[in-house]
Image (cartoon, rainbow, N blue to C red; front, side, top):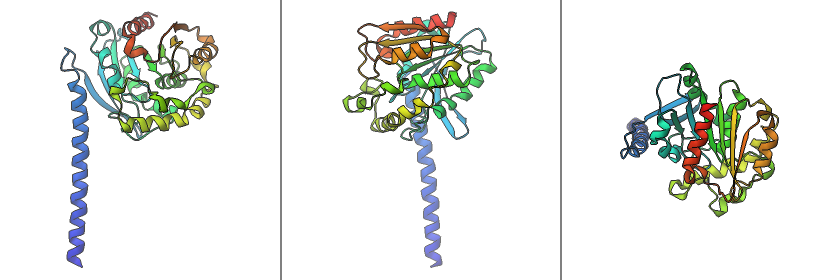
Amino acid sequence: MKSQTSISSKLVLITLGLSVVLLSCGKKDIDAEALAEFEDSSVVPELLYTSNGDLSIRYLQVRSDSALRPTVIFVHGAPGGADNYYDYLKDNELLGSLNLITIDRLGYGGSGRGNPEPSIAKQAESIYPIIDELLADSQPIILSGHSYGGPIIAQLAMDRPEDISGLLFLAPAIDPENEKFKWAGKLGCSVPTKWITPKDMETAAVEKTNHTSELELMLDDWDKIEAEIIYVHGDKDRIVPYENYAFAEKKLKHANPNMVTLYGGNHFIPFERQDDVKRWLFDLARQ
């Protein structure tokens, strides 16, 4: 019996040890894959992890410590990942005057892929440490949110109105009365399919199942936003209805937003309208 107990204990220790090694190797692998995406460019981003309590996320950044350079934080949709914005981080025109950060939201990429976090408030809170670091360097902060990323940047601007200088909403899913779950059955993702994994779709499904109730929690807080705003939506968006435009116009009236309709435009604004997105970011940086 003593021998069997000893053997069992050793097996448990070996199993735990292998688990730690595999987790460590897996983390290194996905980090290496992310950095490999920049081998064809002159840009070498920093790949970093940060935590706010038990909320941990991975992000990539290209930035200086200069207080004169605004920093843009890109927040992706559902599903999605930091890789949705790698082309922006490689863009020399943007890098000439802006610092750029792209994050893996909670539940995606290097931020606990496959572990959904449907709370918009917690998604926003996970980004707090990045905001705090930028503020320590006195850098103006611009948030760009696409699709599901839209309400997250809105939540950040509600929570910390004095800390956010600009908001770029790209086809955001912000109106609880026009939140449609049917997108999951017709592809209905916020990014072109090459970025999607089954785990990402499962995570997105959990987020979207809870999205209406999460948006309802925000209904009374829109007037807390003080940032300069550019709102963009395509009138042929078949994933996040164009009716969100009217909701934004009403809820953000106090902030005098620049409301932009892309006539004939679809949902994939960051991927198909990169030059326009750059122009809007430069406009916010000048304000």
